[in-house]
Length: 244
Figure (tube, rainbow, N blue to C red):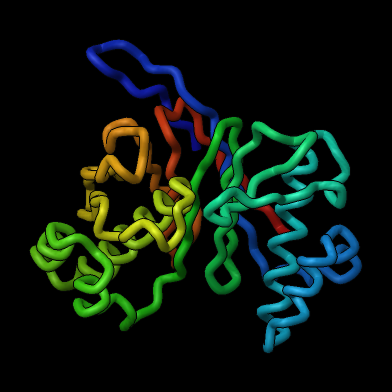
């Protein structure tokens, strides 16, 4: 998938090039590849109660290390991930300047990588019965709830997940974690309406809502909804299907 540059006032706008990797976390057992992980990652893997969750976590981290190591030109095992003040993981030296974000839902992983300060990604496997009005009212902005409930009943479930993943992707890009209220910004959710940030309270971002780019990549993840959030315009998106 490639996107042409945005246009403003009839002029093409150059922007970031983003790579998106779709990961099947159940395809292969990572096995000996665990040697690529740090001590902290191994300890976290061991804390999972169920084996399938442990394997999926390891598969995602191994795939992420391999991809980022190739982009940075260094041994995947040598990558270090310091965190910022909000706990958002970054790439440490000598790999600064590469932004990434990994998300997973059940056996589906989504990794976004680009040159820049930050990027956000989120994927959610569609769970029938989860997208209730009570959850929407709890986490969505009032106007998002209004627009969701205005849709035909058969359209609401997928619209709920559109809203959820777009908000989560933006939240991850902003890097503020739970300190940023989900109601502090609004996104599109309607069918046939392009992904877009509609409102963003200025105290949470130096960029205006219109300066952010949201991209829906759900077409590449059957049975799921997925989105990425990028500060500024996007010139190109390359999507890769990866077997871990």
